[in-house]
Every structure is written in structure tokens, then in C-alpha cells.
Image (cartoon, rainbow, N blue to C red; front, side, top):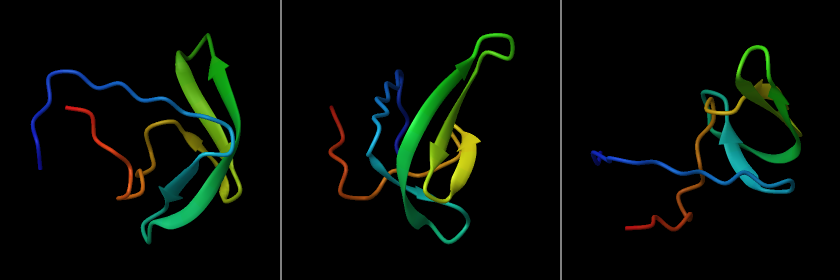
Length: 64
């Protein structure tokens, strides 16, 4: 684990992410922002979820 001071994430349609307790691969198909709730929801090939309820694949490059 690493401690970080800032965190930036870019989500793109077609991006591969890992979802669920077994970290199954899924592809982002839609990104929606709900102004009233202030939440970002993503639709994937495995269903919908709030934006920060997924994991990034291990191959993702970490910026220093």
C-alpha cells in the first residue's frame, strides 16, 4: 500500500476495469454524472456501479 497526497483518475468509454469481489474484467460503456447527488455512475458490460467501486487492472501505469 502507498500513501498519496493527490489522486487523479481518467475514465474512458471502452476502458477495461475490474469489478466485483472476484475482480472480473468489464468494459466501460457509459459514464453519467448526477448533478443532484454529485455522483458519477459508470455502466459496464457487467452492470452499473458508482465510479469508485471498481479496481484498475494491475498493468495500469502509476504516475509518480
